[in-house]
Length: 312
Ligand SMILES: [Zn+2]
Image (cartoon, helix red, strand yellow):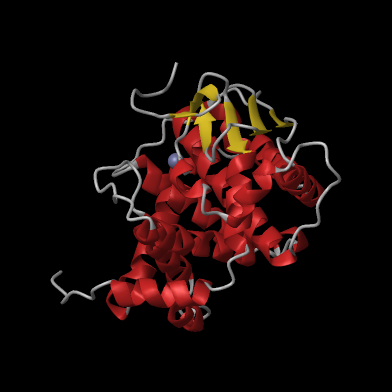
């Protein structure tokens, strides 16, 4: 049973609603996809360091995005607007909060957020190259908008610290002037709405008995195997699971699963109570990370966007 009708399922795993993305259109052009042809069971391959950061950052971002769906559902968090936008906002706020934390484990949070941001520029360019129809009716904002929404929240969280970043990531001044306010609204809303379900407050609202376990299914390709090892070595899934388990009063157990889905995707499966991240999706983002020209894409995205006269 899906939470709503209309959620598409991840290919090969019919019970998983792909809340985040279905990217089969892009698979054929992703550099990482070529490795799919290699037979599983071969020697582990060496992975590129830059692309590994890209894969890891996007895995973290999508994991947080899907966990946001889970928390929104479990705690019946009220939302104005699209749930997908809210999940993006929560994922971004968590990484920004980690960036400002003194925990040494969190020192790479900003780098993870920046590569997740840049992934949307790569996605936008690929959709453009393939003349993909932009789904203006979709539950998700289009890729370019998701990019600018994240950039705006980063800049708005501290315009002084991120002044140079706003230039590098081509945030137009007409949007930038609203970002501090956008961040402030989002930050206050998330704190207020999640506070009753956090830490010591959780016990009074809900029986805080839910645990969060992590499962690694067998990876389908040598590249997936290498990326699984990378993710396992980072401890990302386990640390995030612990954070959710101890930080919130979950109404029931939950799982985080790396799975082979047959196509890129990720989702929160309400019936199984598990966040599924597909190996194919992580491979796709690894491939994006091998494309060394994100600066050029940012420029192209900026120059392709009209800058309207201010009207409100
Ligand atoms: Zn989503």
